[in-house]
Length: 240
Ligand SMILES: [Zn+2]
Image (cartoon, rainbow, N blue to C red; front, top):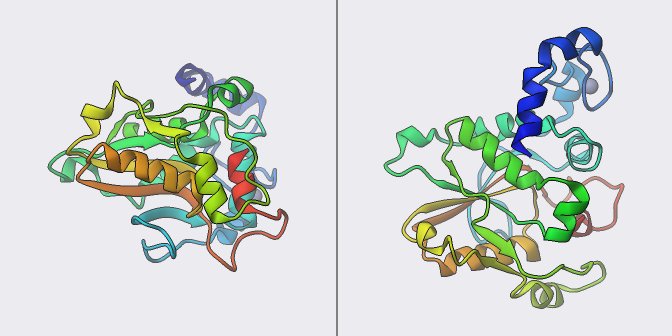
């Protein structure tokens, strides 16, 4: 769906005249199509460290998953605000080192979406973020590095082991890309990170391809005590 982002950028001056920029979270008028209003900015919570509790690998997160970041993620994923990929990616990019400063640029690999869900939504939100991060000089996007082999049923109500079993084998390295991942620094990209079954399945699949390192980069990281109260299970939400 890169053409959509290109189209949006191409017609931006017209869009600004016909539709004055609005904050994607609250709808207030703002100066820049790509930003948030000051009030909404102030409610985003920015993590100070990189280590998420319970995560197997370092996690670089633009924000904690709270009511505001949830609102942005939902607008992006389900609300037709596909252009939000640029804003979310910019916020992630601010926390990543420039690829030029590293000996080998990292590979940016999105958490894969099943074909059925891809067809239904029209885009993989994580793949768009990986593309935007690459444009921002944070590495090389490898959007089909991981694949989903089967549609994952809802994980609601399942315990950790049952979730892992359900996802085991559902996510794999794309056989055509496995050689590219070997010996590289890999950044797993997602919109929301929870140290749950999906990320564990992605990390163990990438690990089999023998990269030098695996890091997770996400827009919003779920942290105990900060997750919004509006839904029961963060993982249920992430699966949507
Ligand atoms: Zn706002």
